[in-house]
Image 1: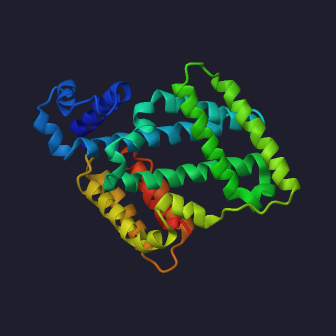
Image 2: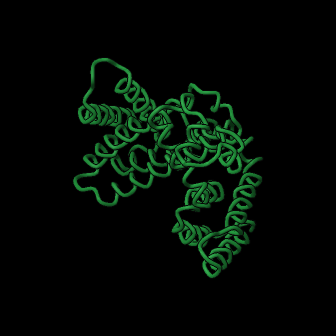
Image 3: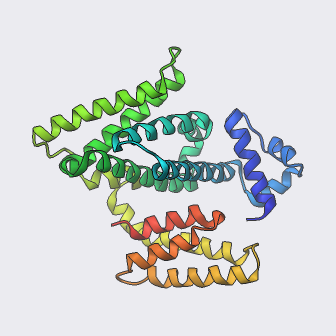
Length: 294
């Protein structure tokens, strides 16, 4: 990614964050970058394509910081869970015009954005899943998918209330309230030996608009992501030696993901190496998620 392209994304991120997508024009973004309007279109065919990049970077930033908080956080799993919810609310409020308001925009029906959003949804659901298992353990496995969807719905509803209601809710109090209610729900469902109503198929339908569609498209989407990775590396700005090194790793990855039974540890190791480069990180995470998803 050239410096000019990154400057455009950085400027768009700032303006979308402050003013929103509809209130920001390509002309304003170009002026902020001190370039001609046509130069923006050389990198992004439309404002929608630019929002896709901004949305992707914003989501990647969220997970980077959330994972760092997970690694450095202190306290019990329950306390760290509350800290994660507080951080989520704070981050989504700060970037509400990018990460919340898009649902009311025509961009929600844009093909490239729908594909990106499905990957973000999958990653977010896995994030919810890992935290619920860490806090409540194996006893929630019989009704895990129900718990994930209930937790997601609670987060979404209270975020909207924090943002929109005149009466200001304390983020910290809200986070503790949510966890208290989850505690009670888990206790009740565990004692009643609940098996839940939802299963993996509900997840597939939510993330991919149906498991059959997803299974049919999985190989095609993985190839598209890998081809994009290859294209990025062909124009890699970080020097010839580094480009060749990254291309060799990518070739190994490409050969492995086409195997009938790809080796998960090897794919994870190769992706982890490529993820060290910030400009490749989001794309590689998406590719890994598609290939390794069962």
